[in-house]
Image (cartoon, rainbow over all chains, first blue to last red; front, side, top):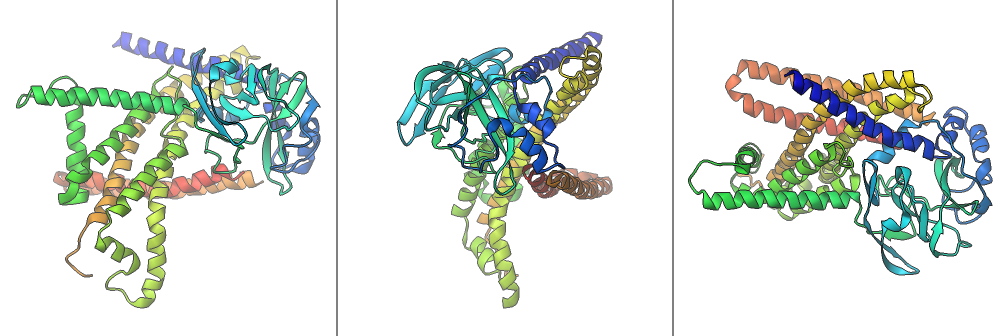
Length: 450
Length: 68
């Protein structure tokens, strides 16, 4: 018992240290990040922004990044201040490289742009260094915080290979007074502005669209492929075992899969869908195990801490699939209940029909937000607790503070990870049970007219 | 300023979610205590309701998160 407890403490210490190492690099490597954050107090408005934007040469409009910021002399400024929120956002984002501890694994990039068509290359060309920033550029692409960005300058000539001295980020206000973040690559002592890009939300929520489509095999895609292969492997093994050991008690992987399978069938599919559950059982099982597998994969320490099910893009695709399958299988009664609810007066229908119609779209929307929100929130909570080390330690300047921060961070992180383990199961279950209830409502046929 | 307001909004959403979860949890525990043989069904309904409510709270929190 004592040995187990000791092992747990040692493991958690290693985990926090590995996070710590990662974040340490971040705070040193990120020029401009915290610099702007300190100058960018929310209450000061334009004054502070004017001061922080001097480097960029004043204010610019949101999409007007192709002029004025190209080839301005700039140098890499090293700031040691730590920005917890930026770090957390970076760690829950998708990336074009897969970083495990100190090692960066390059991934294939598939990029389509209008001028040059499809391009295939390895992100190893960027020589990603500390905190997934590329030391080199390829054509007019650079790697900034793990994701491919394109230089938005007309006077920049695409080259096969060029050195990137560093990156810089400024927070400025656009013409509408909205905060935007402008990112620069510093090449030959000159700053070149990068296209606006937010990978965390796929550019849907204020990220801005880019002039190229990134169809790369990213960290999330790699994780999905690995988890799918793993699931395929264990289910195939279990299926074979059922064929071979027909009539006998389950053994090995069967013992784990069978109760879960039965739980989904008996407690989710049959009560909600009823007699037609057999048709939808494969869908429900796939959804459950896909989400569960990816949730757990994201929790494994030292494995890159991917946030696949916490990515809005992934959950959106899952939700759209559920939406399409639900509506394709919708019986007469389902549509009748939406457009022409039986048994209510006509003036109530005027209100009820739009609400029901809206509900049709809100259901997949909440499905999407719930999963992404829960998983991302868990990741951010863990990252914030680890961030305490750097807040107390003043980014490595105060050892005593860092020690105190570590002492607080380890139990909190362990606690959060234990909670997340439950959340991984609960969210996979909730997604499945809600899918089943929507499907049940769609295929239900009423005898009574209420 | 909008950031502060968004944070307050997220806090209010969490208060609502807390009340809701408390109601769901309390009532279902009462129900299970009254009828322990129906514990499985009650638990399923409880999780489903909690998920619905959590969805509403999460929309508020995510909106607060994205509105800067």
